Image 1: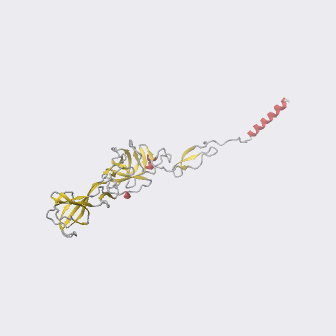
Image 2: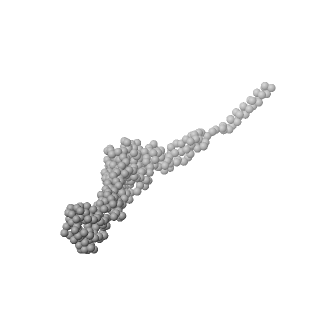
Image 3: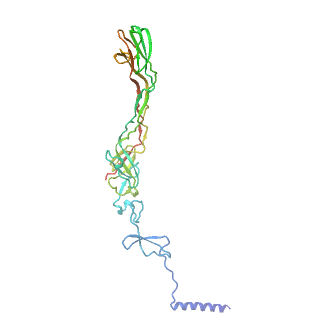
Length: 361
């Protein structure tokens, strides 16, 4: 039994050896060139620098895919040459803006000539803000005009006293006269002196105000416009940006009113024109007590036609000896009132200034 098994094994080995001797090829496998997700650089047909990806089965793809051209404002090495943005020779048209200590990112800046209005400033393609440039003047508030008027219901009256004696002694009679009304004098022909005393109800004048408080705009030396860059790139010494289009310059902000170091030699101190706190106002105006000025005219007739002489209605004694008095009339000659005029108050509180430092190119 053992001899039979050995004999069959011998015959199998002999057949294998015979097949090999007759030239039957052995089984072989495809060599592995790469692994999945692996890439390698290559040179494309146009001479560009590119890459190949590893395909299924471990072989490199046959075509070379060119890297995209360098984008100079995205902080990425797009063309895979080891250089980014302004550090890449492909970005020779861009500008590397050096860093400035304690400064904000770069922006575009335009300083308008004195007298230019806001609608004369250039537009910002990607957004920005209008700035006001120092030095500045803060005009006070313009206060409204105020007037004092005599109340329309004030009665203009006077007490008239006639006397037999000089110096307003020996009172004969007292009459109450209303302004602009003719009245007869004393029935006694022996009047020697007279006294006219105003009888006007005391009070204050009525206030009339014309207009409202006006706050004139601040007077800055000029206006300016700052605009943001759409994209900002990288360079070893700072920031990579596209060259500015006229009339803009490339600048940085620094807080406060400070100096600008090289190479940022152009300087302006600015304020955000939307951040003012304006407390300018005016004190209220007012009117004091009124004084009505009355005048008494004497006439020789009884109808206040033939004028003879007149006196102020002032409460003083007036000589009337030797005068034939027929009639009198009280006349109003205006009024006096103390006006307390409005006065400007308050001020404008500006935000903290910022210094614009612009690159000298």
